[in-house]
Length: 476
Ligand code: URA
Image (cartoon, rainbow, N blue to C red; front, side):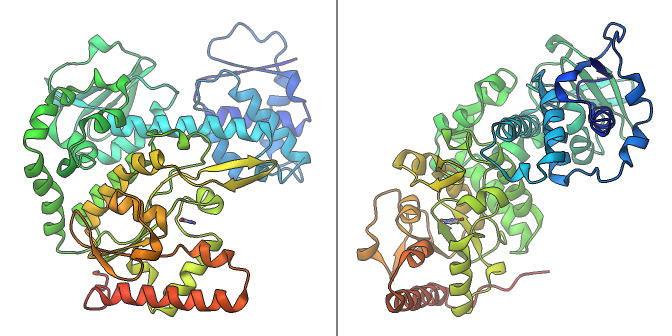
């Protein structure tokens, strides 16, 4: 038996070196015990194998796909004590089955992807829900935050906080480790307790970036807002106590934040709107508002310029979109692109999104078959499209199919009746309803498919014509 003792629970490099050496020596996974920290002396240490990991790395024919290393980097951070051995098992299998990672039905691949997803979600939560309070020490102001992660993600998140708050002096205290930034260098200290961190109001700028940008006061839904913020974090977020004031100042906050952001940007791409959009997308990446996030690979958020005049809304990501993390890149996306080109609409200048942001499917063997989102899922996910609408403020929103129309109008819409004419949206701007590109894909009769494609292109042209002028050019 080979016992490998890693120096820290999140030490990817140590795991990788040991795993490569063991794999090169063809040590089977059930002959390795992985442990962390000051373990008892390695009775059966893998000393011979591990003595020269560099040699093992150069062994002929042994290379692993980048996707494996990306997966392993996340999985190593998980709390699951089996993570190292599961990863090593995958590594040994990859040598015999180089395409294994593409087999999403394989139980080991699925399990590791689920673990990686939980880690990524924890990383996002730390970024979104951590709150700094100001204290004064010998060096002046220092900002201190307390956070309890579920996984070993604190070190992996350090660079994010250093970049985001480079000019502040700050400390992040967690049960396992503490991080300290003095404006120039990052240092580590031992774990801490909640009582070591100050209580009181958090500093404004920090939560404004992450929180107020997703708070849509025009349609105050406190219940939904609090649902979005996992209960676990409430106790650490004094602003939950501020909810009544937030509601009272709701309209002002909306105009004060998003309108100001847009005005300051003068319609340009980038700037404050883009920052608010980044924060929104980051929040959406960690969305657990409905159960669709569980089997899906990731949130597929909208994409396109924040100052776009035209917004296209689809139903939900499909299999390929779920893997790529981008809307309309699969077969329906190709039809959509062809139609946009025929209507002389430049996709890079429009905003493209979906009513539902996670792929809903049924697993049949290795295939994931599209399943229609239900009314509850559309309603729950409207939170995100409302935020996108508020930020992008498109002059015209094109609903591609019934799900998109239902989301935009918050009611059931019959495409046949409403198609092809401008309809005012409750929150401002106009909508234009047409069919979904996948409807065109399903048509068997060639002549009918051509006719319907032509009608679809005409709809897109009509929607564009509603702008009164060509789509606003991109600013530098
Ligand atoms: N269908 C959609 O509605 N959206 C996509 O992103 C892909 C297919």
